[in-house]
Image (cartoon, rainbow, N blue to C red; front, side, top):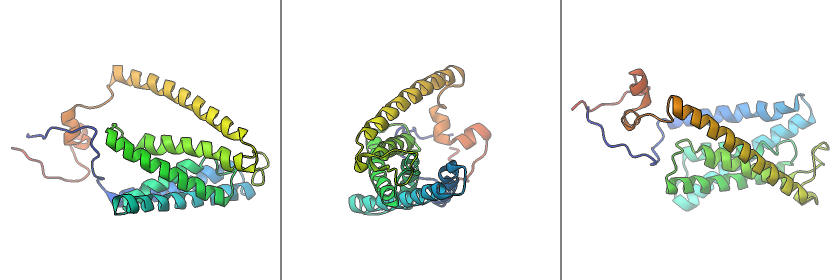
Length: 230
């Protein structure tokens, strides 16, 4: 069987764009239960979290396709889905503490940061096929720090005021929390990866990757393709 030499680190085109949009829509809908449901009651705080989540996500999706349109000439369906996920991630730390305007700004800023992080990842050819760190890592970091900017006790008296409400120290607190999280996540991930590396390995052989794991591991394909048997 003739196999082309695999090129690792190169971004491959999405296999099924409609499914990407379906998945993003399911995430958007399910995230309401994640954020608003964290209030553990159907009340004003749950409403705040619900509205903030939707507002930030919509703003982030719109900002992503604007950036694509301006900088790349064409907006894309995958872009709007990626922007929406970035918005969901970014607003999660802040959803119960900010106004709708704050949520809108968090979504737009987070989407912009993630857009350029994804572009940088592609340029540097980091092996992150799902853009996990550029979207979730960067988005979570930016969203957590911006919580310290836009948070206000007028929304949630149990929280704290942020920079724009006269408390710049909250930004420092958020940054410290982010750094601690990075350390915990980094150490935990390193241990998990080492355990996987000495047991089943961290990735498949290049030939299996090129052929596709559906076929290499299970002998079947999710989407039938012509295979060169020469």
